[in-house]
Image (cartoon, rainbow, N blue to C red):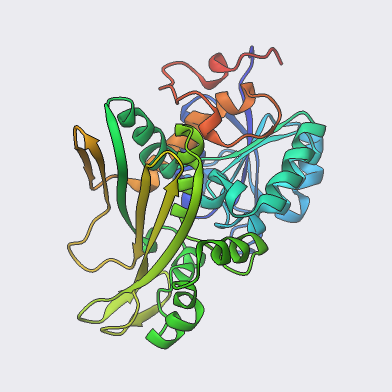
Length: 361
């Protein structure tokens, strides 16, 4: 591309502080930003990222379609909420206005096994308008590409076990509540844990109907099966509340979580495949106690047994950097809803972003 990549930011909360700065530092031009929060609308994006005035102020999200039609950006970065139902309208607005879009929404990484109806609808709309939609972030690399790469070093695999933990305080109130933080034990059991003993088929129907919101590992196992060429036979999830022995202050919830009450949860997803490889993946999202930190641990059982441990990953920053680095591949991709297991691995961009985009625009 012989000019700067023109980008818009949709959602100007915690993640956008890094997303917008990384976009600018990788040579993109931010031409607009949108949010629904009156406290954010009207702010200069430079004030949000701490770099001084830029002249680009956050507009009401209601104006997104109109402004994208006028500005004709190359890509929209959607950083709002965590489910496909939440971001469907943002993706629809982008597609209808001929704008490629990529989201930090965790489900958007691989929505085919959780919200197939929405994914198929957006896929058709994207193809019709010759754009590409996708999701990316920390799981894309550290639960996906990294695992696929390590699998390529194995002679035989019988099981892949992954455990990853993150502080829900870093991602906003919607994510914290989605993990059960702040609920009572009884509320957790009723609202989240009541599906634990259902069969694979029962859970699948509930997930695909939208009645049961799965953990991020539900989608991640789908991503891994697709990338590794595995045929899924069954998949189940169990959600277990986490707790701490003393009270914890949650700034995101604006409340104190009493000792013994849910600070979040551990969600364990087990996938059996026709090829005999079991995926057992666990994500632990909770309000951290003093001394706790993010971890990402994976073990491959087989020959040879192999483990990798990533301690204290900068999960927020890595989410944003990985997504921004995906943008050239997104623009270069064929149209449709293209989940990232179908894309080549990320490249580190030494040159401005536009030099990695193949098309002339």
